[in-house]
Image (cartoon, rainbow, N blue to C red; front, top):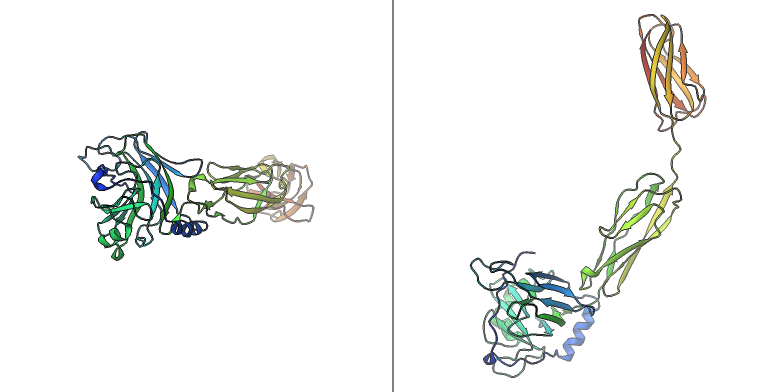
Length: 391
């Protein structure tokens, strides 16, 4: 998110009106709560400055606290001298959208001196600034939604519709929108926000969505490919999502820090289904299953190596080699003379061969290939061995 310049609003005095507890109109509350059940507000809590915080409390209400920061920090203009620390509730996904025609609103537990306030920055250079519980100019109470609105830094406070019209909001779009607690109040002042409304939506529970996972095939003794689990919530508190995976084959485990399943299937691993369960701060859950097929560890295959030849006569050669698993081996010798292309079989456990009828001073290659049996088939995955020598 781009840095924002949080400029503290001037302290509000008696001439601006009387601050009274904000009370939303009953019809507005009912309508927006019904919407919130399926399409709650998506928000992000951010803060800047020592002692600043933006968190959810146990009742799942946002709490904003502004601390302190050096002048010019936290995105404040160069040369500014005020404390730029802030805590924000940012409305997600509103940039470029229409300016709300339904009045946004919220309540604050400790509103004073112009903070916390709601700011709707417009792409025409104007901004709508809403203060909870502040009386309208010339009146003794806020508007029906419990708010008073100004255009920019104006000290004239009207209802939302009047401010909307004055800012020519119908002919532009939203640049950014948020509720900000800044250092207009003493550092460390905590404000709990309730009854937050924007664009006809409210904070609350939504739906937890877990992406389906295709069936997995793993092999005992072989590291399984890393599996990323994807889950999200449409609830307002997106940070409160937890994910668990149960029923994994033995040897595999879920790492909640990066939402991955890793490991090597153990000897006792069995095929079956694992269950992914995601739960958000509101208690909403989403699940999916992962079908696992566990293949047994492959039988070891022969590997031939360390072949060497020793001449025991000008036309006779002793060839030796090593093999990891005994098997029948088919050999083929290539070289000059009548022996060229000769094929033979070596029984399991044999690692020595004698070859006669060679032509002295010539090169020969003997290749041994592991087979399933005499006259059988080559063993899949086995590694043949070759020995070259000069007789």
